[in-house]
Amino acid sequence: MAGIPIVTSQGNGGGISIMEGFRIDRTLLSSDEMKAIITGLNSLDSISESNRYKQLMNKLSADSDHIVNADNNIIIDLSMWDKSAVSEKIELIKSAMEKRERIAFTYLAPSGESERTLEPYHLIFQWSSWYVWGYCCSRNDYRMFKLTRISGLRNTGEKCQPRTVPLYTCDKLRHTDGGITAEVLFDKSVKWRLADEFGSEMLRENPDGSISMTFTWSDVQSFYKYILTYGDKA
Image 1: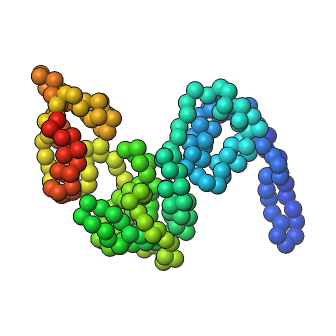
Image 2 (image 1 turned 90 degrees about the vertical axis):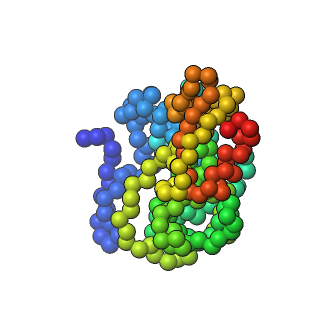
Image 3 (image 1 turned 135 degrees about the horizontal axis):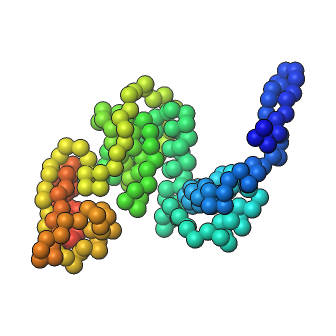
């Protein structure tokens, strides 16, 4: 009834399937809907070495190249300057999440290097970088790790433990739960950078043009390392 051809085959190994080579009729979706889907898939291919999403686009529509290249004014590129710096890590982490297996790696942080074992639950692109979020077996708590700071990434083959996983939320001003809270006064000359990093709607402007913001950070040392990147403007 939906216009999708179904094939049945009898005997050992038989079953029901969609006819081989069938493509979804693009008339089932509006032009804008198809553009939105293909734009999203195209953005995922920007960080993938496999072109798997390109193959999926071809299944969706024989005209996918034409739609993306000729009639779409939105381009999303999730890759970094060095695509190989994260693409292989993303593929390994995705595979571990699908198999529900733990990963292990060396992590480079302001406090030094540490060995971590993680049960990964989410790959996250935010703050212009890629992160993996999950249950850190080394700290017995949920943590987020920046992929560019990860080295020696490997799949341990160990199965993840059954857990009630909390909902991941992104708070632009909260570096991590707990830690310290600080009020920072910024010079108006760095307003552009604050807007870049936190969004213009998060800025609290004072009558003299300066900007006040409240931060929650993991520890004093890493907080000052961040604030000092503003020099005498904070």
